[in-house]
Length: 545
Image 1 (cartoon, rainbow, N blue to C red):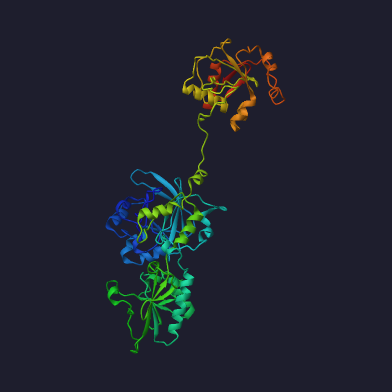
Image 2 (cartoon, rainbow, N blue to C red):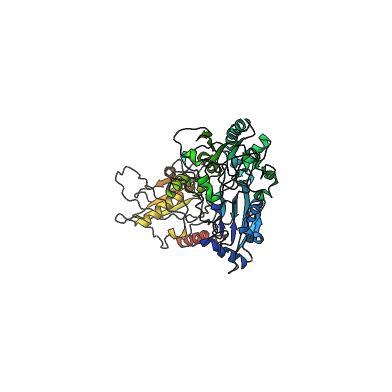
């Protein structure tokens, strides 16, 4: 029994299989099949009135569902508002708000659901993602891989949400025999019984007006007979089924039904009578296709179980089993799964938690999301200590300004009694580690070097490449000059470099006539670079265009 309220979070302007309450405001309606629990409000007076004053609202379904619906006089008023869609044929539908004129286009594809004649799933594709509404469905393991429109080329489409028929999503119904297995069991029982005499008949005690046509056509084919039903009206537009059913009660296989208000009292009695036309008593057995009854068994059972002197139960399901649903979801790997039905004995919370395990993992979700580059985050790492100092609690580093000269020289002021603030420490560390910064990380104040109390850092231009991979790799490229070593001109500093720094990897000639830019110039330059402005390089300066 469907508990779906009719609305999808992604496309709330449409209603599916529910036509009352808030669904009266929908811009379009979709009917997956003609079972009563999916037709609530479909013949309501408020909806009927809405249709009379609307120019755009329509009901979309399959061709078979349209014929089944209009066969009932109670729904005849829908005739001019129904738009049947072909199976597996993507169709663009405009969802129009008649009050404001707002319009949203979606592509809808009807996929076979395997539940009953005319039953379909709806695949919605639009600006809010791909969403699959299954209605009621029965898929065997592996069936999803054979549905072309669930794929884009050789890949499964990215499904945002599945609104799922979870009727048997319960370990009690872990495995339900396929329809073929059930058919074989019923065929054997029917054949053994009706072969005894012409007065031995079988009654298929089917609870729904239609949906068991799979049994009718296959039993009729195997025993070269027709199945007795109450009326042919529902099958008139289905010629592939019509030839296997009849209103002549002289056949040996029946699927006629009791009047609804008499079903409980008449039980297993044949609805069309218990005697033949010549008055001979009929020998009758009843077979009731069922699934729920088998799920309540505590022990493994056969497909056909005798429940009385002349009554049998056959395990026959219109809905996917627990293992079939798991296979279906494992193949699609949707981001969200919403149950449309709560299995008997379960709660919404329990079912939702079980279905969450079948959703795409967070790590997998990120693979579908494009993340553009944004502001670089500050990196925090332990600063390396140098020399033999055991308790080096603070190390002052000033922001690193990258000059146009490939060899990079920076002077940093250090006072014995001065400590940087946390934010300055963070900036300096980040500058040293990453080698590239956003404009707000730079100070607008000019640092004035004090040669007497300062020490110098000489960094290779390759620092940013090395340090982005491993912080430790920056150590061989950094030379700390002791305070007693007074840095001289550029030539003197070059002579004092370590062997690794004077190797060919670091021996890069200076650009002719280059000079270290002023910190204010660099700060302005980085702001322009970060904002995406085009920068034109000129001799001695950088100018934005």
